[in-house]
Length: 297
Image (cartoon, rainbow, N blue to C red; front, side, top):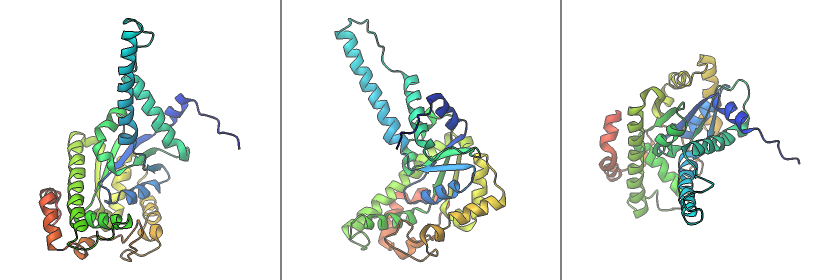
């Protein structure tokens, strides 16, 4: 099989960045994958996942460039007596490298003519939002927030699938540790988003997991308008059906499959899994943030 003919870099960058670029973030197990699927179902939107561009690509590249320049400085001093042939790499070189690498990832599913927006969903972007904005100043950012107690329950089940058999047993060391860690991680993720969004209101939009359940049409319409694509009721409904829990899991919401990534698909399941002691642990870690977000505490 012949190798694909490489696309000239200038055309690759133009093809990707002539579209609206966006990034989706959220605390892990907050519904980021569901939001990704909803957005990706729109004919003019492409939402990839998970690229981990900020923490696995851009930040390591920054460190690599710094180390390279340090080495080149030593060469310049010791070999060329301060008159080197090369003068290292600067921010412009880094900008080009990042744009080319990210574009080469985003283009992997093709770029049909009707495509107007292209983005990536990675939950951990909450801790790299400033980095992404620095390299992609025209990007837009979406965030999904979910009741932190439901997030903790979802994390517990996800941890159980990873082989930690005692994590679902109330009172066990594994259980208590994961409740505390889950609450702290949720609080840190949401707080990081709120700080970023507070400084960049015009390019940020937050939706909630609960809103997507209770009023998916209105919630998704606002997201599509934010991205600048058609938000007609027929398209919104098509996306909702395409990314429904039943279509993604093969089950009705509430029908639990403990081994599935799409486990249950309901709101308020924390009441079935967290006892008073668990709730107290969670509220100590994240109660103030829960209250400020309007969740009943």
